[in-house]
Length: 330
Figure 1 (cartoon, rainbow, N blue to C red):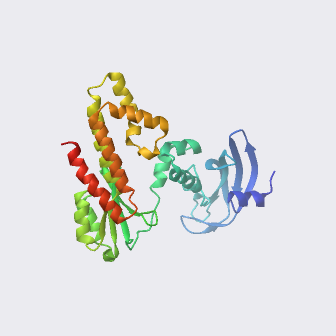
Figure 2 (figure 1 turned 135 degrees about the vertical axis):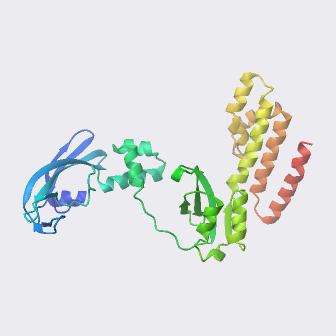
């Protein structure tokens, strides 16, 4: 049996006595109790060290060496002679009426930052999804008191407070989430930004093409340069190409239509990133529809504009694109 000092420090179970450790192929069970001490009665505050009885609770803890860990906690119930009541000894590692340690909750939540879903994180650690959701409600973040010089705003689909969309503010320079808002309504955003006295320090306001965001920027950040997020305007270009592809497919044989749909990634990819096999497949696809060929080449010209090395090059490429686009479908 391992020494108590080493094991208790390893498990962060100070002031405890390790009584036994059981192991199996996938689980480790650690039997322990806390050292007996004088405690204050939670009912009358009188000191007592009189033990009434013991009860064993099985508590899930963070994994050890890849195995699920269960703490068989022999908890002590004290008796108070002053008020004649019984109570359990305090133990900070396990919240009241819980069968999991606090650190297991944070351990499970840490998986969510590494592309794990709540379901997969719960399954990996032997807990329920509802357990993780409940513990996430306990997370508290400090409210930021100053806006960053570069502020980005967007929304995402959620269900907080009965709202379909929540707002998210980020600091793109430092790659950090600045704040998450319960909804994206203009009234809520106005109320929110009014609380920040350093609004004039925001130099760049990054947004999608939402008109309400632009009005918001004009009100609160009049000196800031408005930047349209690249992801959003590139998406409009890919949507336009997709619409042309779908129209071209309608007159095709079902087998060819299926092939075009399955090969849509070839059309959406940058030409310079395609291998030789994909380039050959692309040439055959573009031969099937003149409209699709034109739309694809316009998409490539737009990508070239995005890859411009400086302002002058970007201006020339944009002029070429803006002149070519209406002529191509006239």
